[in-house]
Length: 356
Image 1 (cartoon, rainbow, N blue to C red):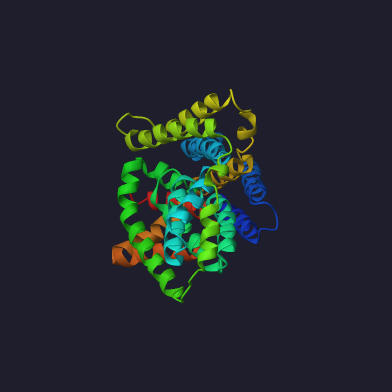
Image 2: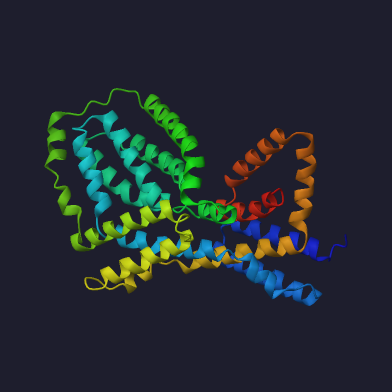
């Protein structure tokens, strides 16, 4: 193949784009967008260009689902519900270090199924620091457990994490199908992680009664900032969760459920607060990043790069499908430790798709 063929040009631009994204010297959205534009200009100059290919390569279901969930989360964050739950759970442990570690870890786990893991930690960590300061013990084990557990559980649901949304949309999974396949593995890993954390923090951590009394004096209700909005938000969230479990039977895409939830919650919030401030929480840079990556991978597919990689993998499969699966699994896992998991997911899905 000639070095200036669409095949090699696509590989070069894609590789350079990925390296710049990993370097984090410039915002990843701008790098991805610049890569997609550069590939489009060069392909147009070479006469190997198709606007239709660009349009078909973007997964609009993923973008709409992500946008709807961003609005729901933005409204829930402002109510103070999560801080309230953290204080109440801590009080229920009556100062037991082990119970506190497990219960706050469990709360982090549940919230990471509703929120993304970064938002979960931003909400829970400050409350954890307040609690540990009152009880006069080291907050590091609690914070580390929350960081680990939030990264485990969000892989179990279809709608709360971008890679899951991308995978579910590409594979045509319903919420229940994704949950059924992912949840057993997630539960096993979660239990192992908790046992490991408890083992690592097995030193005696007795808390003095006077500090426990201070914890019990905290008024969790003061955490609730907007009770009317909270009530309405919980009703909408409950309906959205039910629809996620039943959307395949109703023949509704998950993105439609998320958008209905987002529009409903904004309409209910409008009499009490300005909906625009929640819409500002929509991170346009995220949508630009996703769209640009979809386009970049679409160019690779049109140039035959992904089909070429699929042929190589097919050769491995003929020899031993189990070894091939393990290689793909570990290659993806190791690569995701240095490469953002979103571009990694978007890049791998079309390759795996060739084996349908």
